[in-house]
Image 1 (cartoon, rainbow, N blue to C red):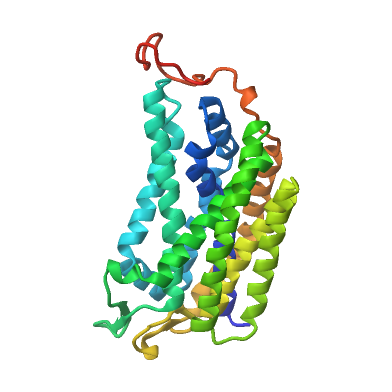
Image 2 (cartoon, rainbow, N blue to C red; image 1 turned 120 degrees about the vertical axis):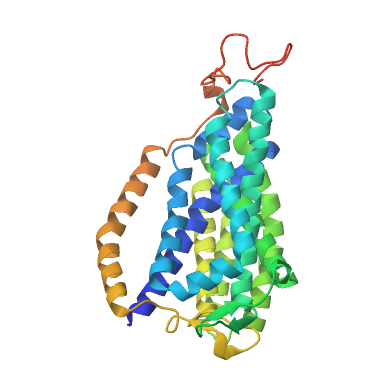
Length: 357
């Protein structure tokens, strides 16, 4: 196996990890005003993410860094051509991270509602736009030859908002929301757990319809490999199994099947693409592949040594984090919803305004 093949597999694995782990972060963020009926419940929902959300984003940083180092031509074309949607994703992630930290700085209900809105928007946009971006990569985009013989994106922002890409965006959005609801059912207790279980089943049905349309469209229009049907079947079976486990109240198994589905979906998209990393819709000769977009063998060898050393360490640490914070969070455990506020006595609340139940 060539180094280029090894690194496209590693990058695919990084995106699998990101979609599985950050996927439930996005889902919980979108569901914050839907399932959080009072401050205690909203605090409980965010507490389930508190120890892990920033670690989950590391997968995106590593995936981006690995793409830059292993396939610089792909990185350059992708981040220049998809500049606006990727900028929107970046800004949304920054705002969401700030909101996680700042919402508890004051006990004012108005203050916290504003930051809650930032969390919702900062979760909704990436969940939608990642699907739009990946769908466009699979579909192919118009390319032109640059001054130095390199391939460049030859289109605008609205070229990316085609029907196929929008279906892809809605698919990732609903999959992430379902994944997040299953995670909440797994990590919370009481009425919040019951409502999360119900929402997972409802949104899961919508996600099923969208995923069927998107996967069939992808397979029939953009895949030239018969064996990728196997990945479609595996993803479909795991997703339906996850919904069945959720309906039976087996949240642990439901989450496992949901995670396998998301990982399988990413594996499917990379399999459809291979050996391309950014196909040209107007001229196949301008397509970027793992061969013409890669770094030198020397660079890839050094990266492989680094990955072999540090990847197990990162995986072990993150696994340990999830194990330590594995217990459920109950809204009843949050006795003072204003705890942690930096307000002085009498500050941060309007007359008659209360925080919590």
